[in-house]
Amino acid sequence: MNSLTSTNRSALNLDDSLLQQETPVQFLPLDSELLLKRIKDGGHSGKFLADAFISSYRTQTLFKHSLGEITRLDLEAVRLFHQVLHLRFISGWSDAFLYELEQKVIQLGGES
Image 1 (cartoon, helix red, strand yellow):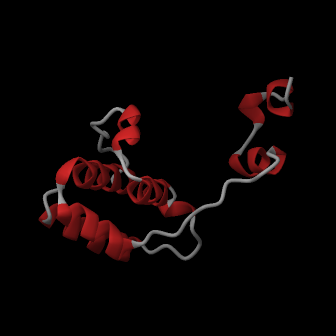
Image 2: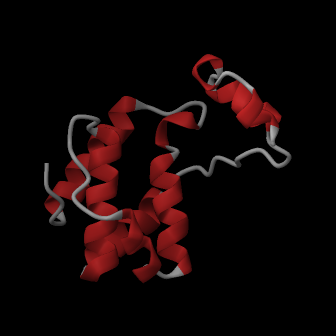
């Protein structure tokens, strides 16, 4: 039984959970230029990443994909997907920047 199983899960917060892991999660800053390039390139990964970004930024927007679709992404797209998931965990993030980025993603075909 690991330490997370024996701990009252409802009392754990993210920081406590990360401290209990042998290797903490490494939050990756968003490579916004690469994200826009991949969205502009289109295809499944472009649509997946656009939808992921909008859903991550607009927390009320549903992500309309199965997470199993990640197996159809190349390693670069998987890395970008993780970066999108970490948007608000990177210190110094700016809502104004993320809003501008969202508008560019929408222009490239992402849904709002």
